[in-house]
Length: 338
Image (cartoon, rainbow, N blue to C red; front, side, top):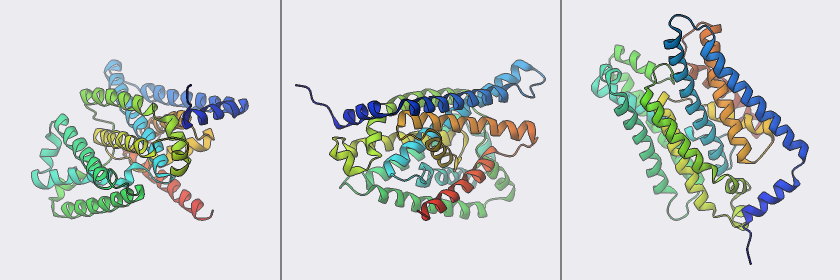
């Protein structure tokens, strides 16, 4: 006699009871998002292309590939993080990853000077930055969440405290460095897609594919986890195991994407919530791809507008953080009025 797990039962009931009209609408939304993302990537590659076409196109293709890697990593990790924390205004960046990235950059300049930062081997720099962030995430997770069944919100709260500590240390070190070095440091603290090492891009892409494949196997269980811990346990889902595995994936995704191009703080909260609003779905098999497509479209179209329409070399992360920050405030206001 075969038994059916709670996750499988929920999945069957969802598939049977879901109206066909809703499925068609979700497919249309995903089709539109895919078309907009593809159009944005193609437009970024060909609009304003002059000079040595082959050389310039190669550079733009590499930048688009970096945007795809970062966009998918941010969208994927943000949706998973909001699910395991059961909160729609939190993103993995609140755990202090961005602040730790800034601190590492600042300490390098403080102890070795701006020349050491600008001339450092990109592979070594990437390994140091990603390694420090992953080690921090694993140490925090093991200390607070891997033992004694402590509350997940305690993990988030301690992450916020460490993020504030890292920001304070960065500000202190920045005040003590040479003003000329400070200018170089500031340029390195904004997400940039202009100078991506090709070998690092390939490594990040392969790692992203592996992590996304592993995460996809958790989607059905995460659908149940989103209903709440007690409900998930009652339906036969090992809540602790699923959350642990999701947090590991989130930590690696965020660390790799941040080390590759730099921090994009509010992109995650923007695309994760827009994906849910557009798809009107709780299923991670729908929301995660939608959030990833939205993130890639935002990066490619945003960079295209900045470079070709406005003619400025302003870092895209500045604009994304501004827009995402306004959206974040709107979410806070909406949640407070409920």
